Length: 359
Image 1 (spheres, helix red, strand yellow):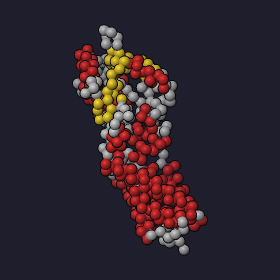
Image 2 (tube, helix red, strand yellow; image 1 turned 60 degrees about the vertical axis):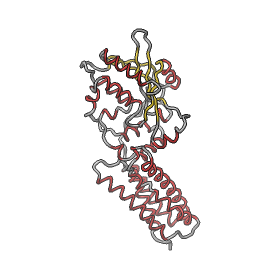
Image 3 (cartoon, rainbow, N blue to C red; image 1 turned 180 degrees about the vertical axis):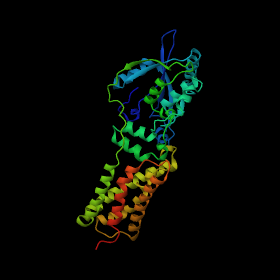
Image 4 (cartoon, helix red, strand yellow; image 1 turned 90 degrees about the vertical axis):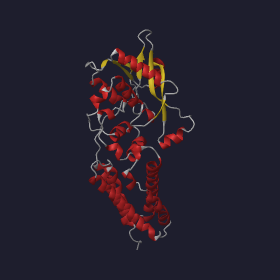
């Protein structure tokens, strides 16, 4: 199924259809069901303990939603051996029983696509994984997440700021099949245990009326570096020309950085969101910026900040510089060079602007 407009639909979706050859009944085994009204849903979402479930329902009933919202759907008929097909159908029916249907959802490693992939691999006796495990296109969890989130700026920013170095390791094709379309593409390329192509036929069930998945785009560093340099120059000019305006802008900047950094720190320390852990953006969106807020308020009202204020300014700038060193020195660095290019000049300029009391 193609991507939708709601943020949890941006990555597309998939399921397994089982057709009963005696009756022609097509049952859709859909691993993507969740209930936001379920008690404790929000708390588990924040902690990284989401619960999804497998639901079996008639194919046409499941397709009705996609038809209404304009999401396309394609059906791949798989060339399984009869025994494999029967084993897969039986395993899905058992998995869909209420006592077995729920599972702990992970955005990258245990979702609707990986559940489909793993079910097919078990039916093929591990033959699918053997063909996909050693191959890589060089994509990462970050690059794929940013590509698919790009139509919604807030979602793009949340992924890019919130993902740590875990998301920057090159993926095998097996891992990259956490995305439904990537899995569909790979199924077209592999063979079954018989040596024949696994996909025997493919048909369009519904046309995609919404925009398709965004294409891959190579990120450019220079706009971020230019924006950071211009912002730093503006800070140094405003320090003498409009100190009150600079104090107000700096206060908002420190509040934003500090609050974002606090979210990153809490996500690392207290949640199971592994993709957020050890996030180097903590050195740029630094929680220490919240300690600069009282000094910013004093400057806004043309009062002298405490002596500690200038020490904190320098500490924040030095820690931002450390993010640059980590980017250069690590063998598998977090891909946050664009944020360094933007924010390091700003932190440095603010430290220089108030390095000593105004004359």
